[in-house]
Amino acid sequence: MSEKKNIVIKVKYPSAGSSSANPVSTPNTLTQWNYRRIGLVLGSILLVIFSLLYFSGSDDSKELSNKPLVLPQQPVETKALPPVADNPSAQPKLDLSKAVVRAQLTKNIEKNEPVDKLKLPLKIGKKETLGIYYFAELKGMKGKTIYHEWLLNGELVSRKKVNISSDPWRTASKQVISYTMNNDWVVRLVDESGNKLVERTFNLELN
Image (cartoon, rainbow, N blue to C red; front, side, top):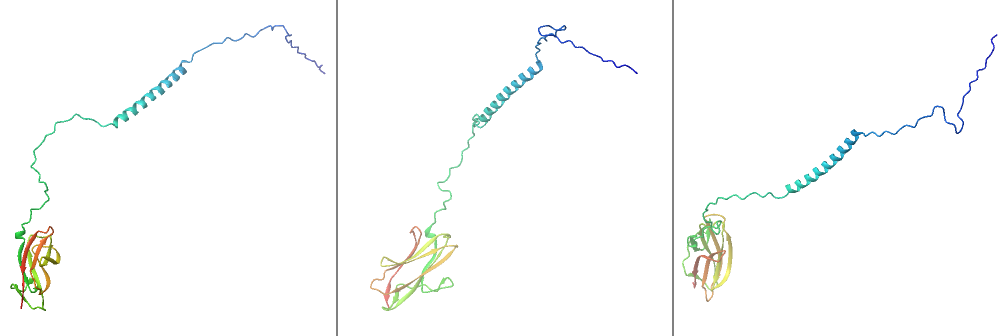
């Protein structure tokens, strides 16, 4: 039977105040520059500065582009033109003496034509009334307006407006008359300006 053996390990700790047999040396601090990182930082700073300068410069150019562009003046070739009339759209003045083709007093109108031509002076009884027509045919008056006017002793008795829409144009107006002591009748056609186109005077006599 084998005999048991106890193994004892002794550890020696340094006592207080005594230095170790193998003292640990304090490491020295070594400074080393990282040039790569420094270059990256400087490059980033320069890039930011150039970016600011670029965008500020682009704003100035945009503002200038909004300003009007001034070009040097070039000589302009001039050409004489014919004189322009004061009112080129004005139509030639109408010759009123040629506007009325026919005009006559008649006792009636049939198919737009007078049935007869009254003889003057007109015969009438004291208690009689007559209805007579004044017929006229006009030329060159399309688009114009005229008026039939009947006057007795210088006073306007009736006025009829006529719009002319064709050329030539026939028109007539009727007036009922009776006998009075003074029977100076006038029937006429006038235009919008009051210019007289044609006029007829007549009197009444007792029948």
